[in-house]
Length: 74
Image 1 (cartoon, helix red, strand yellow):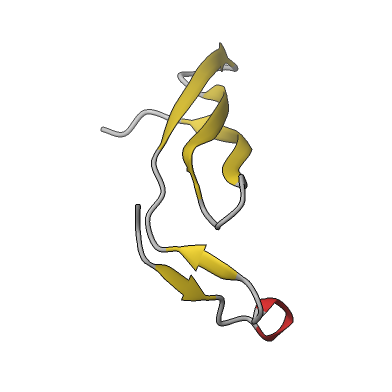
Image 2 (tube, one colour; image 1 turned 135 degrees about the horizontal axis):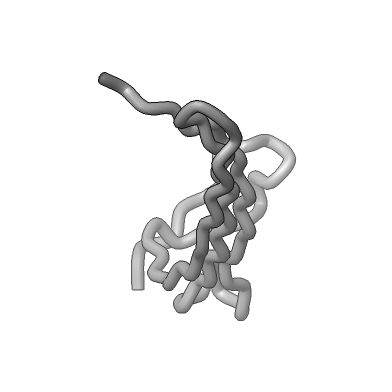
């Protein structure tokens, strides 16, 4: 699935990667009130590739962790 293309980065020019990838993502979020309507938000997201991105068995996967300040508007 997906057409293989050469990687444009000079350090990886000998690698072929497919142009399309499918996967699923799982995540969650926690919110903590601070004061006066302000809050702290913590998020985590894990993505898992379902298709290979090269001619071998390499699949994508990554973990994202985010933190943010939540404040009311209006």
